[in-house]
Image 1 (tube, one colour):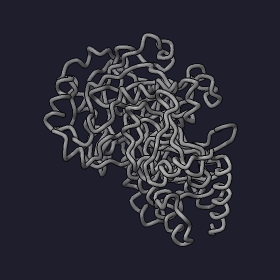
Image 2 (cartoon, helix red, strand yellow):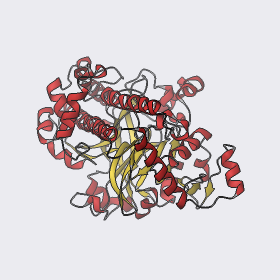
Image 3 (cartoon, one colour):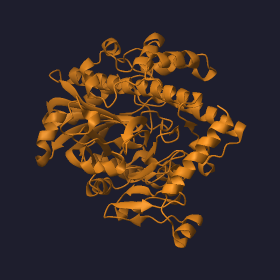
Amino acid sequence: MDSSSFENSTTTSNASQASKAPALTQTDETTIHKGKYALIPTGEATAILPTATTTPITVIATEAIRQTFDEICLKQAINSRQAPGVTQLVLNPDAHCGYGAPVGSVLVSPTHIYPGPVGVDIKCSMSLLQLDIPADRIASREIRRELIRAICERTPTGTGRGQRSVRKARYVDQKLGEQVVVEGASDDVCNQLGIPSEWAQRCEDAYHVGHDRTRDSLARRLDVLLQRHDMQNFAGKMTQLGSYGGGNHFGECEIVSVNDNARAIAEVFGLIDGHVAFLSHCGSRGFGHNLASGQFKSLQNMFAKWNIPLPGGDRDMVYAPLGTAEANNYLDDMALGANFATVNHLLINALVLEAFQEVLPETNGQLVYFISHNIARPEVVDNQKAWVHRKGATRAFPAGHHALRDTPFAETGHPILLPGNPRDGSVVMVAEQGAEKACYSVNHGAGRIMGRRNAMRTLDQSKIDNELNAHDILSNCRNYPKDEAPDAYKDFNEVLHSVKTAGLASEVARLKARFVIKDGGPADD
């Protein structure tokens, strides 16, 4: 790519956006210029955030949640909205500052691809496994301790750990690893790893293809990547398949409580009231981090070489116009990382089911859904094909959406898996037609309200542990990580109130934690 490609696309995009921007009053301009960003309410749980040159940012949040958005988060949102080729930006109630774009945001562009609004943990995702055992089968703390032991013997935690660190993992060599990242959850990959092949039908995307919509381009791109110095540890990264990682990633045993007015939808989802389920949160591990880091470095070097202006002066908001070699390389790398993340989740669920069957042999299980919250996907927005970047945001297609045709969820909308925290629970939701106002997206969880260092410095360890014990929630950790404590996150019920009041989605079931698998190491994302 040469600098004129960027300059032409930037000039055209900004001129187009400026022509659509509403006239701002002098007060609005002064407020923006001083860095004090005024969120203007448009409803009980909606607002707009004006910018100087574009149509406003859509904000989904009650007044209480709007108070949680700090100045850095709002500045990142404005930088992202005013970036070349961006036509819409949504700020969800869980939003907080991230790399380039806020975590908890949705960025739409029909002309450009942005690594920042995907993040370094490509296709960080949620999955939910429904088991057919009733809640009373795990009432005993002794049984739950046995389940924790059996799971941890199969699914390691921690940023550097892989299959060799636990006794009962599935071993993945380099050859199978290459097949995984190119094919995703293909029948052959699932069969080799002992994953029920029908689980692929319960994935938002069971596999991803390259920039030209083929797997061949992914295979060619992988050949190139394997020659790079930073990919010499590829075989080692493949041994992380079937593992959680650290930080905010977790596995959590739940009891399902279906809402009375959503029983028909719950039946389609495969949820069983009063029974055990298992919720997992993880992504593409070290492989995805390597891919994303390489892309950031490559694009940042190119921007510096050609002296191309960065949106808001932020190095994490590099981009590539679609159709360029740089954009094609990013889309291929993102797909490779996303395929790893997909198989990682499915393998974890297969191993968790195996662990339950070791302790409770009568157990059977079915995947409810697997859904991402760090990905860019081609979708139709305002009757135009565009790349929808969801960073800490989850797809929310309601009943009748054209993309759900020929899926089990065509008449209900697909499951939305939103983790809260062990104390306050998590939730399964389904999109309403009003989700269109947020580009068919909702938040990916509660969202941080305290930085990790601040949480480690100010929260009380004994209070955290005693509170979880009082709720009869067990953990594999000697001490629950302070930077992952419930009080480090926003009020989950208020976040959900924002989503429901804005008309984006409704609750199908609540999930009550019975034990948690965590690691105290740094987060992958």
